[in-house]
Length: 172
Image (tube, rainbow, N blue to C red):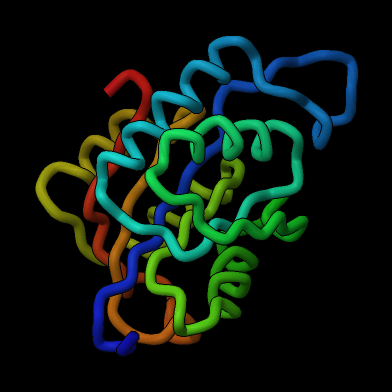
């Protein structure tokens, strides 16, 4: 693929987690989270984006979210469980995305707040329609996702280069 073709990044926050007496990394999804993860998976499939790669945090709630969401996809992308996504800052997430091979056109990142929301805000230099207003109004609740597009190599991904194409949250 050419680096002149638009690339898409979907920033997907894990679904609603439960609060059992375990470490934060080991927290599973709550019942509502399991339902919302499947709904989000259907909405992601409805975007028509064929994902080449999914980068998923190693936390239990993100792995469970991804497992339920990807069942709704027509084709499962290559999945990499990446411990650097857990508790990552926007800068750390950009550095991770900069490592993506250029033969991957569309990448989905399953992560956590505040990093995912901040990354969406930082990358989006522009927005289509009311996507930015909806994201600002709703925040980034559990199971929400933003769809961004940019042109160039993954190494060129930096603040402000992307366009926010869409935003979805379970209560949208």
